[in-house]
Image 1 (cartoon, one colour):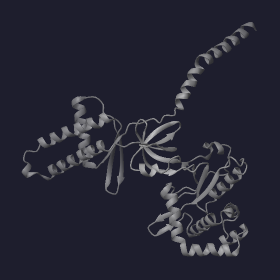
Image 2 (tube, helix red, strand yellow):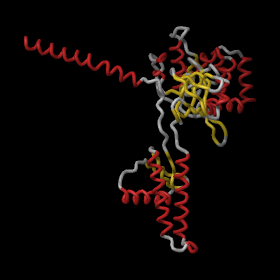
Image 3 (spheres, helix red, strand yellow):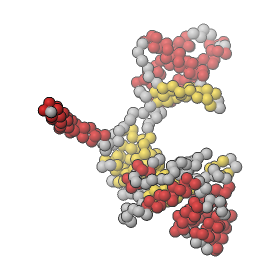
Image 4 (cartoon, helix red, strand yellow):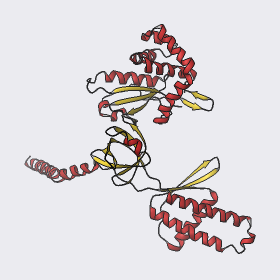
Length: 381
């Protein structure tokens, strides 16, 4: 028994020693993971080649490696387009793209040197010269137009006498780009931006939206049972949240744009149902969630019958029908511009945007951590 007790005491002492020694280090490491700084990633370089261009590119690389040795690092993807097979080259190191440019130049000299009579070029020589020229142009264009990683960043705009900043998690980033004058008008307001971070403490904003604080936007197809269930469950859950913390809910509707015009996944019936719910949302908003609840129970009846069950009177129902008949195109276009144009939601019902940022999993939002949706499937074409 004594031996066992001694062993247990040694184990416990070892564990305590480990915790005392390493917990501060672990804590410090975790603090680093939660850094408030945005990590600035270097750009990468990309170009697309056809068969002839790739043949010369590959030959240039092989010849140079055989001559100089070493390693050159790039990603290669092949794909088929309407114009034929393409090779997509992606290079992540600036020195590598410069080296490739040099090697392509050496290959150009080699090809030109092999031509004895420029006044009497055969077909193969003409193709080779044109190909090496277009290859060199593409490599140069890639160097001059590096691809920066786009980030989604939210923050509050602040304006001084000479500069504009975006305040993000305690840090200030100077705003650059073509949208400076527009953003300047939003001093003190929150925005969600799509941006490049090309240098420390600078942000080049290429697109932005005013941030809808404490607001969940749900994008649905009105005949999608999964979406209707989700809306109903989310609204019931929100009713359990204290009034002071209760988020706002906005519902939007998904249309598809095709050559023949606008349509929806479940056909013309869903186009009309989308419009009915849009008009109730915009003009009789207090009835929308009740209407959706009734529609969830009965997905087959005419919308007018559902509207009557909801409590809308005959005059209101007639007004909705008139607007659908007279303003159908403009109503759809306006909704499509918001849903697809502003947020890039073209498919998947339901889709979610929290505080103006798209999100896949609602449980990642603190206030919705305990939400349990009955069905996580989505309608999708």
